[in-house]
Structures are given as structure tokens and as C-alpha cells.
Image 1 (tube, protein in one colour):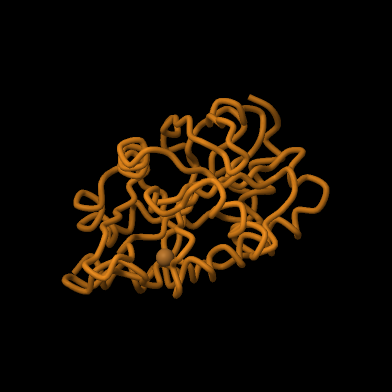
Image 2 (tube, rainbow, N blue to C red):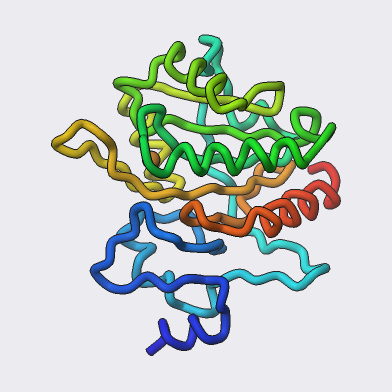
Length: 225
Ligand SMILES: [Cu+2]
């Protein structure tokens, strides 16, 4: 089985077991094209697509990062294109998530701090709400404050349900409201280089933060677009 081979050859990449679902699971970094979850699942086990760079390897380029223009928690607009020249991490969360989104946010906040003065100046983290009905700009603002996600490096974005559905889909993120009112969703954090190309995606929340830090620094070293 391909899955077994992938697990052996690439121990850091967790293989999705058929039928296990993918949401809130501990998957690791992948370098796949942007695709819907349905298309993604059968490919996750393919070893050729799993990314594991050597120390000096340049991250592969997946393709142009899907563009978006959404509302910031300050009520302004932010487009991915506005961040050209910076290395950008794009992730998807929602404010009332009680289990895993807070973990992911905390992890990214810690990474932002580790980036030091580059964070904000050269690196931006963008968290897009996948619960636009409830995540108003106010809600996102207090979420950011509560999680210590402050400073110029951070943006929390929301939009109309249609805008959000569209951007989530184009990044390969699955999100669905459950009967209880929360959102069942996948975790996918994408790194975009200074020129706007999608370079690597991390699935789940249990990825190695040191690895993401190395990737962020590697993209910084590449210089401008
Ligand atoms: Cu969540």
C-alpha cells in the first residue's frame, strides 16, 4: 500500500486512514496543490507529494496562492496582494471553537514571537474566519486580544458567507456547520512567499513549529519577488 510506504519513508507525515475523517486530526505538512478536500484525501498518502526538505533545500512552489480580499477586525479591507513582499502564513479558524483552533492560534502566536522583529515587517500571519455569521469584526478583535495575537504581523479576517466559502474552498479547506452550531473543519496553514506563490501547506495543528519556523526563515532568505 502506498500509505504504508509513505509512513515508513516519511515518518513525520501522518497518513490519513480511509474513513477516519480528516478534521481535527494530527496531520503534518504537505506540499500539495490547492484542491478541495475530496481531491486531497486520496493523494495524502502519496509519498512523492509529501514534502520533507533537506536543510538547504528550497521549498517547492505549488502555484499562485489563491487571492482574497476580506474585512479586517478593524473594519478595513485586506487583500493577499497587499502583503506582496512579505512572507505570509494563511490559516482558517473560528472564534468560538473550543477545542483545536485555540491551540493553532497559540502555536502561531508563539511562532510570531520567535520571528522577532521580522514579524510584521517581513512576515504576516492571516487568520480567516470560517464562521462569518458569528465572527464579526468585534468578535475577531477580542479573539485576537484574548490570544495575544497583536501587533502589525497579525490580521484576522472575515467576510460574507459566500466570500468565505469561496476562499476556503480555493485553499482546500473544508468547513461545515454542525447541528449544534459549531463548525466542523479542517486545519490547513499555507505559507505564501514574497512573490505571492503558495509554497507549502501544513495540515492539522500538531505540526512541528520548528519546522514551520525554518520554512518561514527559508522563504525570508529568498528575498523579494
Ligand atoms: Cu476549530
